[in-house]
Length: 85
Image (cartoon, rainbow, N blue to C red; front, side, top):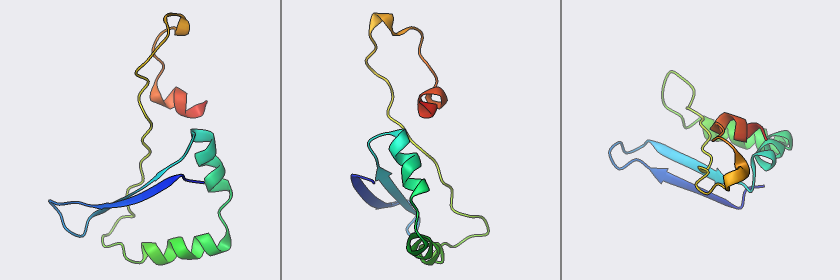
């Protein structure tokens, strides 16, 4: 599971929140989704009941940039390609 979780509120738009989870790897993130229990689903639905708006909350995924590369690693790969590995 996640090794940290947090919640931020937008200072410019009170009532708008950003929830985040940090997991060890993309594979761990995918396993996280595969392990959802009925109880997890019920909690998720209860949390979503607080959402205000006509469209579902936006879900996005952020991954760290590759800042250090060895000379033999080849050209920079896309974030999408890294996410699949």
